[in-house]
Image (cartoon, rainbow, N blue to C red; front, top):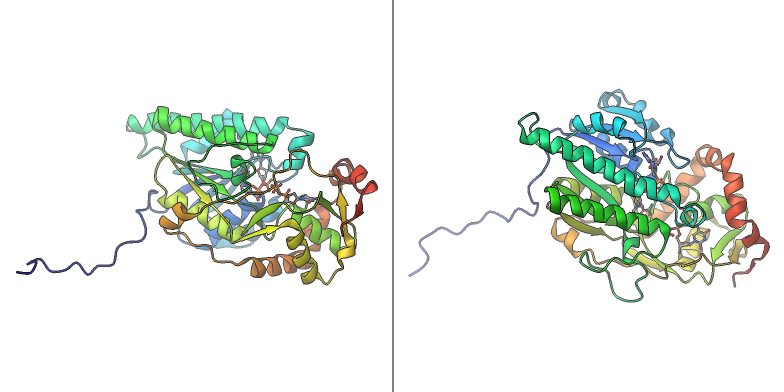
Amino acid sequence: MGDPRPPDRRPPDPRPPDRLPARPHLLVTGGAGFIGSAYVRDVLARDDGIRITVLDKLTYAGNEANLGAIAADPHQAARFRFVRGDIADAAVVGPLVADADAVVNFAAESHVDRSILDPEAFLVTGVIGVHVLLEAIRAEASRAAAGERAASPRYLQVSTDEVYGSVEAGHSKEGDRLDPRSPYSAAKAAGELLVQSYHVTHGTDTVVTRGSNTYGPFHHPEKLIPLFVTNALDDLPLPLYGDGMQHRDWLYVSDHAGAIDHVLHHGLPGETYNVPGDAELPNREVVTRLLEHLGKPWSLVRRVEDRPGHDRRYAMDGSKLAALGWRNRIAFDEGLASTVEWFRANEAWWRAIKSGDWTAYYERQYGARLAGSTEAG
Ligand code: NAD
Ligand code: TYD
């Protein structure tokens, strides 16, 4: 005797359910920076009714020009609002969270070298800022419980693989111990732990993403790839730290933004998701490839004094995010080629950043290093 029930021929639904309401209003903090602005541009370009308010302090790293394409498109501009302000300012944050279905927090000081020079802003934004956002969400959860709004806002914290510290072998999984080793990664780890505590203590609907080294258009020229591309375009020296054999796993910016959006919609409450790239490479190899794209010689590369506490390697296991249904789309060589082309075509954007305060930063970070540099071999 066979089973009398007809076989279920429906394919399994690979996507967990959407945890946001239809046509949500998102508060995107830090949305004028590199990854945040890519997220805002990509989501609004989908033209699916989502509205976005960006709250950004416009630090040296924030740039309204990164969102210029939105203002230029009336369909997108109608669903977009920009507020200049600090996530650590409860008076600004409260009303914005009250009006949002979800908060996606990109806001942070993001450069390891600057965290070694001046760590305080990292802590104010990364810990107090996150605390202020979470408290505003807690207030909205109370209003939801009192029937004053439909649901409490969801909170997504954009974090980093750097919270795992230097990973000599293997691939970090989400449950691994946090072992931050720079003031930047310590502030990011502290922010994450606060998020976790609100989920456990208050039942806040939170998700965390840990992205790997991201690259692409609009990347601030303080970071490895855009610094080396823009210096090479001007035939300036490329300051490679130490032996250049530190490994990073490169993730194209639209893939990072897409993964964050996927987790925002589908991630399970209280969970953390690694967002790895597709290219674990030593820095020397990254520099070799970008010089090839630019047609510039290796002789521009200078070996300079290493970064103190320099993490040797980051590498993450991405199976949890893959099981949630996300796949990256852009391979490293394709992404690097289009990034180099973007910097070639957008000189005005990066020259404006590499002026003013930049000169003092560059001298402080690289002046003595370059003076004492040697051939990179
Ligand atoms: P970014 O430095 O380009 O942008 C940060 C943005 O946050 C800027 O627009 C800045 O003005 C804003 N900001 C800073 N402090 C603020 C405050 N107190 N209030 C409001 N806005 C504030 O950084 P990014 O590279 O786009 O990184 C975005 C997020 O992704 C960060 O949280 C970072 O830790 C994380 N992340 C970055 C990478 C990477 O490779 N760039 C990798 C993994 C995770
Ligand atoms: P960076 O872009 O600062 O990202 P992160 O420190 O968050 O990984 O640096 C990427 C790698 O490149 C890292 O190993 C440090 C190295 N690096 C240099 O060798 N020279 C530089 O001038 C910079 C900015 C980075």
